[in-house]
Length: 232
Length: 294
Image 1 (cartoon, chains in turn red, yellow):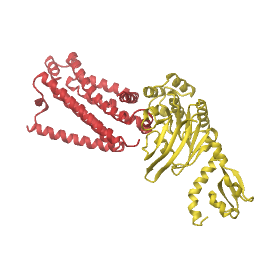
Image 2 (cartoon, chains in turn purple, yellow):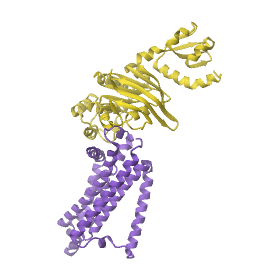
Image 3 (cartoon, chains in turn yellow, purple):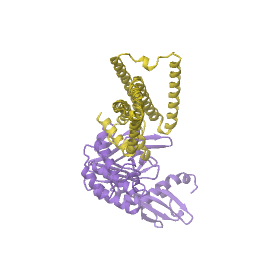
Image 4 (cartoon, rainbow over the protein chains, first blue to last red):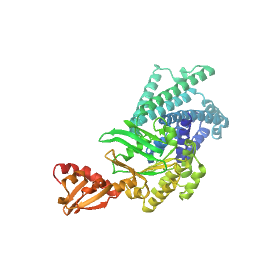
């Protein structure tokens, strides 16, 4: 585990040095929109968090290839597991950040500066009116990032663009299919699936998170196994 | 003498290239020049030492540690300098330290800072903007800061200007003053090897052609020159890289056959450069000679 933490730190230094300015602008942009327009826009923060770790290993290898991974005193599996842990951390941090920003937005209600009291109240109420939306965003991020990481690691970085395109097309088709089925009443909406009580909702959220972390761990171990005998 | 690096029976086959039974050892306190023409297998051997290539068979130990079973402990004791920087180019020297330090138990930040200052490397500039010589020095600073006992250099001097090459060789000479250390120095610039190496391993077409001390290699071979018809057939069989030109012919010969050289032929001590050239010629012209084309 210590090696994995070292690799996470290694990757964080890599991205921080390259993307710190970008993160600051992104954070300010997210905050501005969420605080000034509507708390219900907070899930965009989850998506913004993808940029924290997702490009890390690409930034490390773009100049020098993967030689560094052969030199560092660390197991190959720790490098891979760190990348997947980073996916989970980014998704979780994105989700927690989303909830925090949304909550701050409802407390400050800065949009009251240009809205009527009724409209202000409506926007504040809308912040957590669709708790399923937050979970859906988390599920998407938690599914996409480890899946892309696994496919790119197994099939090679040279196919990265093709893989991303194919996965995104598949994802959009899946979303379109699910939404159309929901519209026709053949599938229940996420809000309908969530239990009515708060404790039920929390339990469902916890189970969904565990399932997604489990899926991430599964993708991770498949990748570790596939890369075990591959040369650097 | 205790060996810092031992390679026994290393075999690795790729499409169109194979390392065949590569074996050599580097004793502590010495620098080994690892020479051979491009594609002879030097980098594959180094990649095998570092576990970046998976050998088909053979055994590699560094400081007595198996490179597979004890990979992490072994890598803590190795410093590596490649021909190009292996670190992210957008980071500066301070950020490089932040990245590397957690991986090495013996990392010494004071040593790193002093080496960066000694090598006159700016610590606030992206290392990707460094000159090639500066990148080499940075990799050496990193190696020295985690107290590496073995430094492996893969073609570090190719593309370096003479001043930077000279500086690099001086740094290695200073490093090896500690008798518990060792340097494996892969290069095809043989003047660097002649200047600094104690031992030499010559690799040719994936096989070890020679391994031993530099003095032994230099005293073992001579270049024989003369008219083509002055080379007796019996001697030709023993010559390496024999080739006839319009105005004469030459070949390399092991010194144990010096008694068989006719007086008409001239002999000169072979340099390492010449040794490499004649090995290559042997591979190129041996077939022609058998077919009577030379």
